[in-house]
Image 1 (cartoon, rainbow, N blue to C red):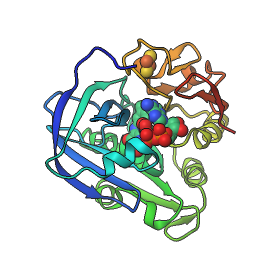
Image 2: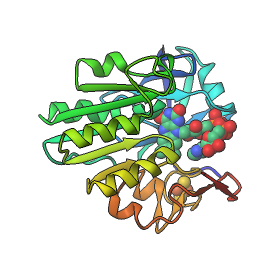
Image 3: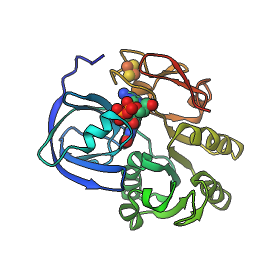
Length: 262
Ligand SMILES: Cc1cc2nc3c(=O)[nH]c(=O)nc-3n(C[C@H](O)[C@H](O)[C@H](O)COP(=O)(O)OP(=O)(O)OC[C@H]3O[C@@H](n4cnc5c(N)ncnc54)[C@H](O)[C@@H]3O)c2cc1C
Ligand code: FES
């Protein structure tokens, strides 16, 4: 299903290889966006996919993990090629308090890096826990290094803290008092991390993913609890997450079938 909202065609102006599986694509789009929002990105003749906006301003960016046929086709594109974009869609993160923690697992840093930059511009103290399976899969280390108080975790210990980024985040939360914890990553990671934040009584904003078709609240494919992720999210607070029986348990695939997450 494709929404009736038209795509704007955007010429790819720059491609940056972030790691063996992740590339950033930069293009001009003067429609304002906020961190946490996403585009529906159309690769002509292949597919359309939701992608977080990883760079704000006029020179926007998306940071894409190659996982299946749509993202593979995107990875094959070069400067001068053209993609279609709709959006920005979704409810963005909201900055709250004076001292915040951001926790990103893998390519999910795409959603949080522009938030970190905005938070610093607004005078907040930002701790950032960035995790990946190994050193080669870390994205945006250089971008974040000079901006925030950066803490790195790798599952195999090849850089920084040896272990899950959520364990590192928990250690930071035991030492510091944060006004808000922002997180984005695989849902199973968010599920266990949510328990930690609940036990510690910390306020959160998590970015969730669901299978999206229209991106604008029409098809219902991204329903979770009483919400539509494309329209009411993708950013949700702890009060909203507590109303989602599906969170960490299952999502629906392209044909609406339940797919277990544990
Ligand atoms: C709000 C949001 C923001 C996202 N931001 C990013 C990002 O910044 N970078 C990034 O690499 N990925 C992001 N994703 C995930 C990305 O949309 C999927 O990885 C991509 O659609 C996979 O397409 P594919 O054809 O390559 O893979 P496929 O082989 O078709 O699918 C691989 C997996 O990707 C998921 N997926 C496939 N199509 C969709 C779809 N239309 N909507 C949601 N999930 C889908 C499914 O869970 C599937 O199991 C985001 C998803 C959402 C919902
Ligand atoms: S993707 Fe259609 S309602 Fe959310």
